[in-house]
Length: 298
Image 1 (tube, rainbow, N blue to C red):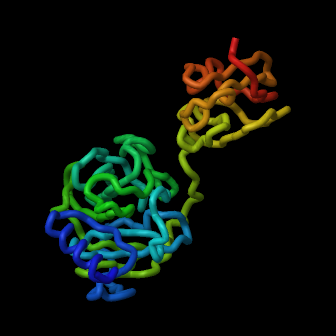
Image 2: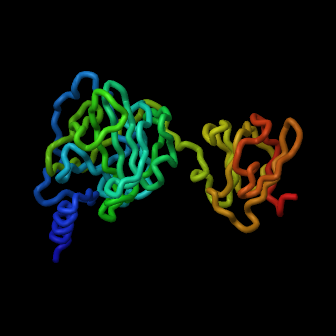
Image 3: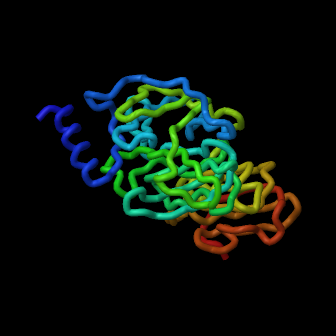
């Protein structure tokens, strides 16, 4: 059986089960690079693609128009790529669903919401319910959780509900990015550039951003903000210290003990798993004088 026939058969089978599928190319009947120019309704936020500024993406409606399945242009592999909020708003729901997997909903005001399915990590890994987000806020990563058909992709929806904080698929509306509408059953847009460029996009500095073998120091109490990372002895650093993390949360023999001295005086020994090695320091805001990797903390 040819690849095209195999893919079509797989799509039909998964469609019968109500699954979403993020394949790398359109089905035989899909229209390529078809877009409409219908303007967004009055009051709709200026949504942008939920990905880094300037990156290119492939959009498919498959059989669940007006929702979209989104993968990297040409789908060379989308698993783990960062997902950002489409517009400023408030996280209104974060949950697991057998179909949508790790799922987030964001309220953007005026009754408008966005929904993000199949995220790689738990939906509260990057943001929390009630938290404020902007287009610069990473809310998760592309994954294949739930009934994603084994394909890493982002299932994305724009929804409207005049009142309430929780929406479902009955509230879906045609998707607009940058004022351009992307809708219509069985359509594909092979290369759409993200215009999510209003603010600098940086990962929320959390434990998963700290590489194995490194210790990471953050300027804000929540583990965000300016970060200094090191995997070797450092004689001096101007990083203001508020919080630290180790090795992406992974123990590493001989590599999870760090001695830190401060310009204001005093030292701390960081140890994987210890409260002072993965949390706020008692007198936060200090400046690191030196970082030395060593043996067991005393």
